[in-house]
Image 1 (cartoon, helix red, strand yellow):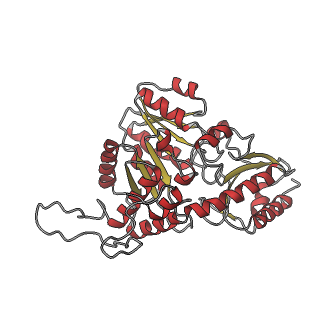
Image 2 (tube, helix red, strand yellow):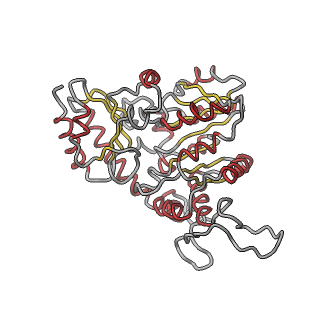
Image 3 (cartoon, helix red, strand yellow):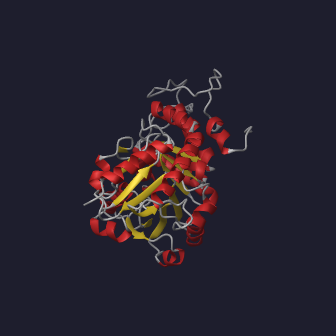
Length: 386
């Protein structure tokens, strides 16, 4: 029986993350590929580390508890996690995806799973009535991000989950941007939650990992079989690092969000900024829905400068904020989605959904907010005058 009720305590004490044999408050790194067995046919708990490893199992129990699911699964990357989830489907099945999702999710559907007869279509998942009209007998799941990457579009998770239950299909939510500290999709009715744990859960830009949580035992059995069969598992050392990162998730995200709110308000009032995408702003798309289903607006911001600003000069003149792929680390990172994270999405589709060539995505870190604002302010000033 847990001796806590709040998620801040669960982040530190959740799952089977202590060592009962020695009393160690940190689960050991079981750096082994195999395990000695006591005899033939005795079905040991541990037999081979692709199938199961105590350090990875501790992480998997932790993320399952944090998301309120039945079971958790750890993979070698966020894309390995998504690949395992998509492997639940078969030829002839179709998946509906949000109109702006991570480019890697689009790419693996378009270039890999399409080859096996698993189809997809890009839909506006914010319009529940229109979305329901897209559900045909071939559709077996709806995969959403909320907030979505990179336009921070908000989808009503509970409404999508109700729709999928009505039609007997799966609701899959990529919760990377929010983490269970800010949003818990399974409590809202989702069947499967995916994380690129590389991001906020790890939090220090020093590991690559993916996590999946499911809401029932049958899904857990199917995904466990896929995880073991395809083998894209997370190693014990990175599992250990990820458990360590999760322990500080609450305090980190509190600071991330505090800084993001200050930066979003600064950008909204800047003469050179044409548009700001941030779910925590009262006039943002989906603000009321996000307020209902999440703790706050998170720490990701996207924005566009006016046409008389040169974004190449903007990126060149940043000194504190790094131009880099990824997000969610303690350091602030900025990227150009059209040529970086979402380059795999064809130009016509990017334009249609609003991922313009002028869009800038900012992952707000935990530095001093005045230093961050000063750096961005200087970079905008230096980019004026095309």
